[in-house]
Image (cartoon, rainbow over all chains, first blue to last red; front, side, top):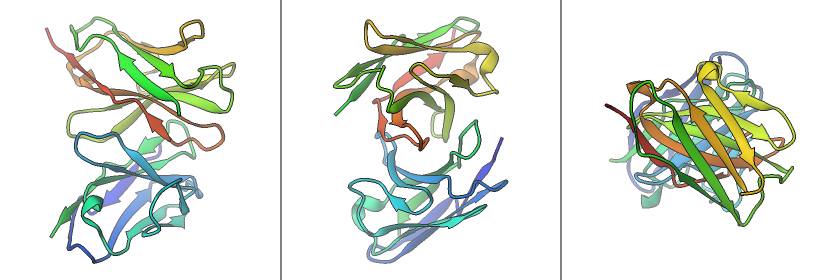
Length: 107
Length: 120
């Protein structure tokens, strides 16, 4: 199965700044990559699919990029509600797999 | 807007079968435009895709669990279910039923999740 590795495990950023989260696939997944946000006690929410396409209702400050094995989620001008855990997920090859998550903390 | 709700025992003994049901409202399991999934999340950990199906199509099981899983639909009740046999402590997790659009295998809607603990 394709292993998804996210870095860093924890990222501390101040509100108003930009956060950059990384996701690496153990083999190419083309652009079949999604990002989710999960807050404590809540279900994950789809942010990005197709590596760079925003899901319905997702604020413009969330940007996805990359293809193949290297992907990035950039969150511009962090808001208080953005501090959460972020997961990447590949849907190129079954079983579809998630990264272990990056926790975005308030600095 | 479709809503999904998991139901089933919160405690299962080791070696027994975990059985969960997902009941849909505001949508139909025979909707050919979506696929239906079970995903689990171990306490404080990441997400694991257990399996999924399209109504009238194939069912896909995670190879790591394949010998123990059955996913099926009950159209008369507008439900789908998960059975996981021979459970062990490592199967303790929050189990989610979920749905996504056919053609892009991502999750757009989730049930609230149900915690299943495997313990004697």
